[in-house]
Structures are given as C-alpha cells and as structure tokens.
Length: 389
Image (tube, rainbow, N blue to C red):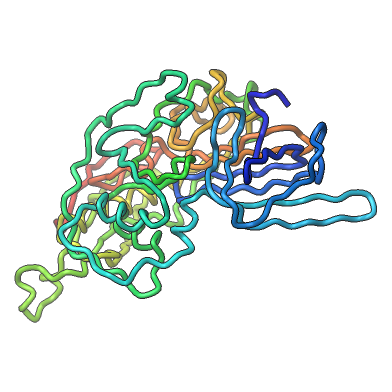
C-alpha cells in the first residue's frame, strides 16, 4: 500500500502496521469514531514484538491524516493451526463522554458552549463551536495552507434555562439533550476534540458519484415509517399562567405541520399521523418550537437514504472522504441526480482491497425546518403552516 493510504496505529511511541483487515466507522450521529483492526504479530522489517495494552492512548492515521485520536478499548489474540492474529479496537477520546457519568449538579445562566466546556474539561477534550465561529481545520489542512470558512449565518447561543443533570446520567446524554434543543450536532473532530456543528459545514466533495463509473454498489431506500403529519414538542417548564388549572394552555410547546388539503401524490403523509414529544430539558415556547423543527428535519433526513460503496478511501483531489460534506450523486437507475449529505463513512480493508461505504441522506438533513417539507416524488398543491407557537 502506498504511503498516502498506509494505515498506522501509534501506541506508546510504537507504530503498528501489517493489517489483515480494517474497519473504521465515522458518523454525524455518533460522538466518537470507532475502529477495529486485525494485525499480524510481526510485520516486515520490524524486529520487535508487538505491545498494545488496552487503555493506552492511540492515534490512527491514513497517510498523514489523523482519523481517530483516542484510546485502545480491547485487544484479543487468536490462533489456529494455520494462522494467528491480533485484533485491536478502540474509539475517539470523546468515547469517554458516552461511558462516564456527569457530575450530579445543575447549571444556570450559561450558554450551551460553556456547559459543554465545563463537562468535557476533565477528560482533556476541547470544544469548538463551528456554528458560531466557522469550520475547524485539521492539523493536516493547516499544513497544506487551507483556509477556514465562517458559517453562512452564525448561531447566537443564548443562555439556557436551568439545566439539571440526573444521577447516573452520562456526559454525552446530558450534552445530547441540550444539543437537540439548540438544533446542533455533536461530533468528534478526529483529533481528540468535540465539534458543535450543523449539516453541510464541511463543504462540497471534489468527486461526483456516478453510475457506471466510480460507484461499485449502491442501495436506495425511501421509508415513511417514521414520518408524521404533525410533530409537537411540549416543554417541562410552565408558562407564565401556569397557575391555571388548564395546564394544556400553560405548558410551552412548539409544533410543525403540513397544511390540510395539500396534495403531493403517493409520497405525501396525507393521513392523520400526529406525534407529541416531551422536551428533554426545561424549555420555553421558542425552544420547543426549535426542538420540533429539529425533529421534523431529522426524521425527514432519515426517510431517504442511499448507501454507496466506492474503491479507495480518498476523493479525486486526494482528500479523504469526510462526514458532513455534500456530494453529487448521478444515478439514472435510482432516478437520482442531486446533492446529498454524507452522514456516515465506513473505511474498510479486506481481500477486495480498500473500500469506502458512504451513507447519504438528503441535502437539507438535520437543518432547522419551520415546516415539514414536501417529500420528493410529486407536485405540491398546498402550503405549509406553523402552528402552536
């Protein structure tokens, strides 16, 4: 394998290679990237035996690009009459936020970024808010002279209502609840830090995915199983007139729906399908509305999904495939000719060589939507409305 695509796992000052198989998974809905590697006990021109103790800090690279920076979770050794191998698995540093409990405390008068920094500081994790100050560049991108890009519309994070952490609740669970109410995503930056981001902030891919050219395998799925005609989010904080017995009107809430009578063909959710959710944190009417818009966008994004497998781990310009980038897909067989968002990536190495499996969702995935959008596949005859603000 050439140096540009050579995989190295650095543990305790030693660099390990000689891979038999590789599985690296990154995604917009997982706060930590994961890996599982199968290696030989010795590799060419390496005189020393391996030593990879679990719990050690590690750095996984493809060429000069750092893909995962975290810890070794597990090491297993196996053999039979013909072969022996060592399997190593681990995660980004942010994996500790999933496993570990947050302190039983409460925060008041702080922004989401300030709370995130307080909770992640003990783990040595820095937080970068891309929605406020722009895209964070990787170490390799800085070396080659790339420039960061500011967000199109910077998010102004206001102070949150009182945030109480439940006993035994993980750090990730605490932050995830707040992130949903703020309409943002929490992902690893691949270098041991945490990103607060939104969909599409990594820009556009240099490669166009085309049927009959660079697409090895593809699967398209369109499901309405989790779509609803109206989504309402109710808050946990009483409104000003909460003293009244009729708490239905006192409870803050936000709702998005499709106006009655809209005709969009067979792909429309025309029948009555309401969904009511309780906000994960204390929320006023504005935050309930924002949470409802987030839920509508999230479900709409997952309704249409394409899984594409391509050869290699890099795009035409030499950059690795990255989550949160937009990519153009042209496939007449699936009736697709549009931009999609890379929501997940699986880098693999096996007998078939190096492969990238890309999970793609709609271009507007995870955006805040003031209304449930018209699904693809029909001509819209009606309008949308926002209700219950």
